[in-house]
Image 1 (tube, rainbow, N blue to C red):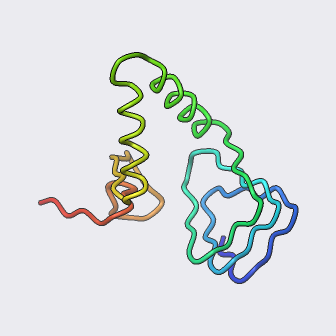
Image 2: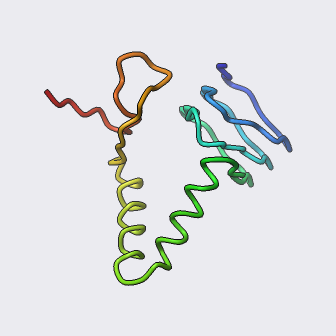
Length: 112
């Protein structure tokens, strides 16, 4: 579902696959379950927090465990977050909600 120029205030917003453009989130719980990813464009987030459930929560547990797993684990997690900051995240998906896309990369990657 597309949300455009809407203000969410004090709400629990389930993000599942929605598109948010020019919205404001004030004092909200932003619920992400891991699939499919929401899309955000030009939004404002004020005193809001993410709430993770399902596969998304398990991913955070995995990263936390890796961070404390021993030599090299912390570095792997920190490098992953550096990649996120640089927009270099990529990963193969069996299927996506957008036809003809092979992954959910933040940057377009063309391989032939």
